[in-house]
Length: 210
Image (cartoon, rainbow, N blue to C red):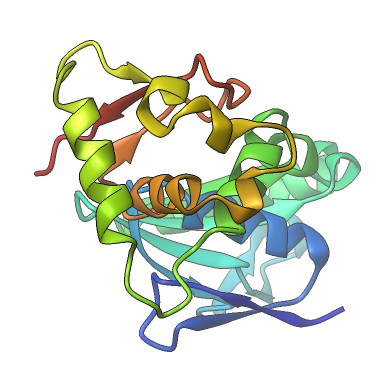
């Protein structure tokens, strides 16, 4: 079921995706500030497959991602059964070797990895607050940096940073302070551990800019 994913990491500002798993997988890279450019279905790889009598074989990766350090990563998203299959393991070993010869990293991300909680829910929450084209709330941003400045090394609990009224159940979607916080995280200015549930006790730190 093809669809589209809005992104800040492509000049086109939108990426075509072919499955729901691919949509969720692209979101994983969208919220990771280590990656600065994304493209889906980026190219066709042709190679002779030794497991099939050297038959000319075509491979279409799901995603190519550029890291801020210049490393290129090619990604294939697979459901768990396909990721474990001997057929895919054999094919991915060949494909990985080809990309490695080009100084490109190749990874397979299974459904269980892409949708691992609580990161999966956290990234969906952040993306609901992604910039919509309107300017960031200057007052909320100033408040965040002012409160964060008191603990530049150890960080500040999210509840103290935004005010706990902005984190009450069901209030985040309407909270300008939380929206501003989420946008700063997506832009790579703030860091929070997305592998833990986002709560008022979650520690927020300023991210070092290279």
